[in-house]
Length: 84
Image (cartoon, rainbow, N blue to C red):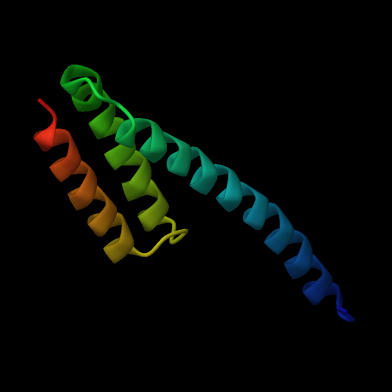
């Protein structure tokens, strides 16, 4: 348990940031899931830049690693390009 004033503040900040990061990570995961389940090329092409933007933002604030974002973007682009 935190004994110093600064450690108590750090714990409060960590709680808030964790909730913030969980919200954005979960929202992005749901968007990826929706994109993967899309069967229409036009809808997927319209959704792709939004998902890419979400992944880039998560990587920028270090919620996910930049290589993971790149791998997800690559896989999603392949999936959308394979749609007929």
